[in-house]
Amino acid sequence: MARPDFSQLSTEKFRLRMRPHAIAIYKVVFGEGCEMQDLREDGFRVHVLDKEFGIDTLAVLPSGQWLSIQEKYRRHAALRYLDFTQEYMNAEGTKHEAPGEWFKLGAQLYFYGWATEDESGFAKWVILDVAKYKLLVERAGGLSAVGIKRQNRQHGRASFFAIPIKRLEPAFIADYRAYRQNVGHQNVMAWTQT
Image (cartoon, rainbow, N blue to C red; front, side, top):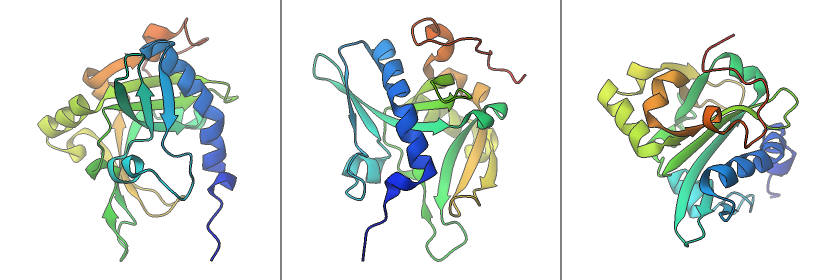
């Protein structure tokens, strides 16, 4: 049986278009000397860190230390919601139901960005400290206390929580506002809806 060609999916094409822009942001935030290792590059041979711990990328610093990063890039149209979507269950309500990203999120950092309309960069982005994010959710009483549970019907049957991004500000380690000159932001809005 032939393996599926994920490179032809529109979501994968979008990810690949946006990836250089995320790397440019990492170089500004973590320093020019950092090297990025994408753990998703092998298609069907997914790296164990990605598959089991939700780690998409390693930022290797000049000293040899590394930071693990989960990434999510969203299209410009999603900017109107100003929410962070946390996958909760995969195939919810089916015989294949399984815990989603929330239950295996082992990355140290989470990059979350919304593309510009022409996909030439990110209109807004944030890097979260995952430990602070998890503790914020835990102290609030769980995901249902900070967000609204939704069902993804477009790509499978995963459920997720839509969390207002401002709610997560205590977990930010960096965001577009402090770096707009360095990564080419123009006419960026504050964390409010327009």
